Image (cartoon, rainbow, N blue to C red; front, side):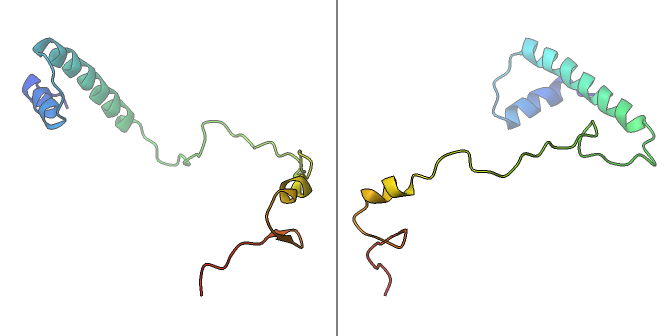
Length: 95
């Protein structure tokens, strides 16, 4: 499949892109090259090839689930208007 200059200009019009004739010709060449690559890839026989989620077989490195910062709850709650049993008390808004 290859695009004509008129088709490229029509696409640019639909995309609301202002394009000069020189740019349209360069874009046509680039788009046609992309279509050629797509046709080459579609010609490859992929039967029996298992889909992969990543190009390389990688495993994620896991780290220990441990706290890295000190607990500063007491400092934060010291400036709160009302606290009870480690919880912030707020006015009731729903009846």
